[in-house]
Amino acid sequence: MADFAANTRPFAELDRSGRTRRLRRLAEAALTEYDVPVARLTPLGHGLNTTFRVDGADGGRYVLRVQRPDGPAVAQVRSELAWLAALRRETDLVVPQPVPTRDRDLVTVVADPAVPEPRTCVLCRWVEGRFLDERLGPPQLYALGEFTARLQLHGARMNGLDRGRVDDLTDFGRSQVNGFSDVVLDRAVEQAGGDEQVRAAVDRARAVRAELGFGADVFGLVHGGLHQENYLFHRGGVRAIGFDGCGFGHYAYDLAVTLGELTHLPQREALREALLDGYRSVRPAAATTDPAVLAAFVALRRVQLRLR
Image 1 (cartoon, rainbow, N blue to C red):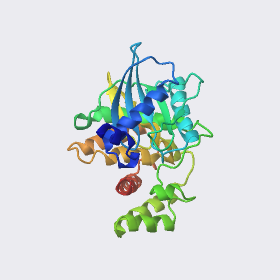
Image 2: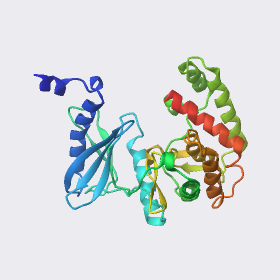
Image 3: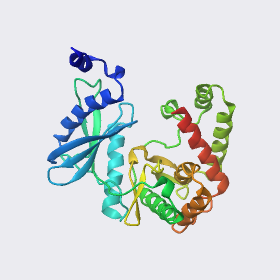
């Protein structure tokens, strides 16, 4: 009786482990669309999306991502995968390599009776490496700065991709024509319990965006989430994962995401300078690395995380 009740409870009432068990069955169905002999499927994480490590019977390793229902649309996920595929073809930057289905599609949409809505799923090859965080040093951040700049240069060549903005203030903002409108800001302040510091941070970000403009030298396709859980190191080289949040924004936003996640480290100032030096070695753009610009985007990112 207990097993029956667990299998018939509404998905929204399940705890994290219960939802992961349901999504595992959906993931198994998704994998039948790929020419990958599966030996083992292991849950990796259940956050905004749910991911599984896939160990192939042929020795290959992969990551299957089950997209959250309120995430990017199928066309937008295809655009993300198209960028990854182009990066693998056209550069030596190490990013996840998309695996096409038997029908040569980069995504598959799967439904399961125990999950209330169809889910978009993608499969990529495993990226080897280690996450460092407290062990980060200036050499790693210099390499990440170079990587970020080269990633942006390639993104500038990717025309016609269907991706949203990385700096929209809230989920409500993403549904509006202008994600920074007064209506969006008023709702954000209300969501933050009336905290006017939110308004001050957004007003400053508005001013900085206006000062920078939206020219190709300061604005384009960016990763949007280069924090310690999305970059890793292997044999001295930096690699990036977690492109599901990529989109269009100011290049300084990418750097601000990285900088905002270093504040708990005692060597944060040395890491900051190394990141910016590495970035400038590829893109010596003073506007993008201006301290006031970066501070405004760091504050904006902090507001976004607070209201997520």
